[in-house]
Image (cartoon, rainbow, N blue to C red; front, side, top):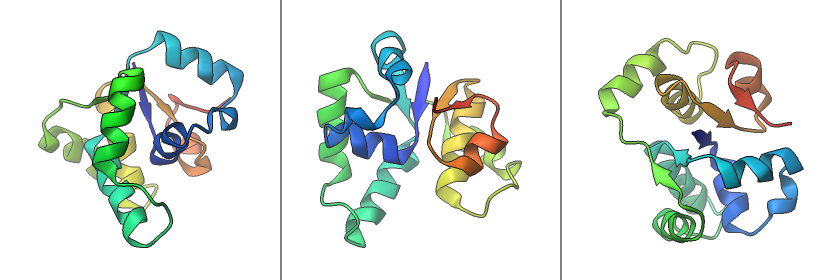
Length: 125
């Protein structure tokens, strides 16, 4: 199982698979691919401030049917309980995305150096 950070979802939806290292593209074919529901909210936020031009529901539905992307089924309270312990960032999106992966003891695909520095199962290369 591997969780995706928001930028990874945006790039996959845009077909920008060349932004991912070859090793990561191989992982996509072998692992169950998951996101925290907060990723959808962050995508909506990015859409509202005109950083991206896509709706989160459309992105999720597209990636769900094309590559089997799934939403984390854990109760929100369990994720927030873990997020409260992540005091290395003030960014609520990064905190909850990372906490979701931690709660599942899962890999987290991100290019965010802060997450890479603070979560041992965060990967990029």
